[in-house]
Image (cartoon, rainbow, N blue to C red; front, side, top):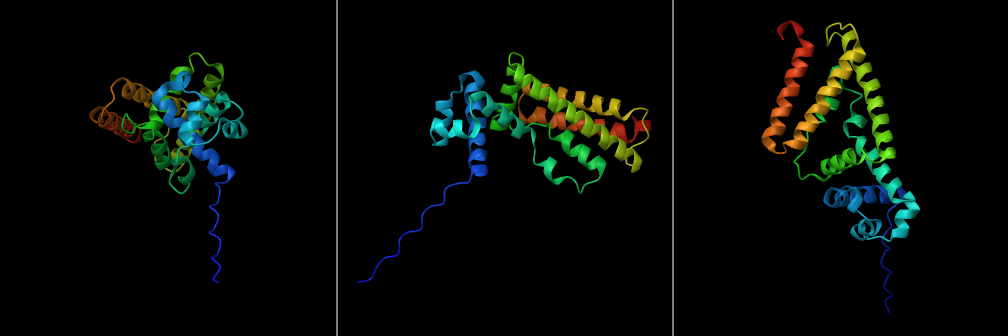
Length: 204
């Protein structure tokens, strides 16, 4: 009698992959229901896991949302731009503020977190820490771009970086209030013109 070999067991996802999958589900659920409307049960059901699994990985809804926000801030560009010139890296970060389609779950999640930060102290603190890190990084890139001859000499790199941050976040607000492909393209054009003025101030 021929004995059939046992079917291979399906490998369970590792801890890192499980956390990544759960965070992806958080983006979807919150983009649909908002932060206050999203429940742990709703997230668990959508991820096809138990609420105990979420508690094991994150501990609470608040910690889950904070982890999702922190992961959302780590854009792909931040991991693979080291080979680019300082000005190219700065442009990558700045242009990441141009929205994807208004239905995109990431951007809808981000907007919900930005709004919730008005009432949620921990969310607001996390966002402020992110802004400070962004200020430090962009200031360094402006300084390096000046030394590399990609940008003209400025009296204060931090001031230039701060102005650029204010401009890009203003574009974010515009896209929130006026969603749609036409306005996204317009915001992208405005940012291109901003960089042209930075690179060639005598022509501005």
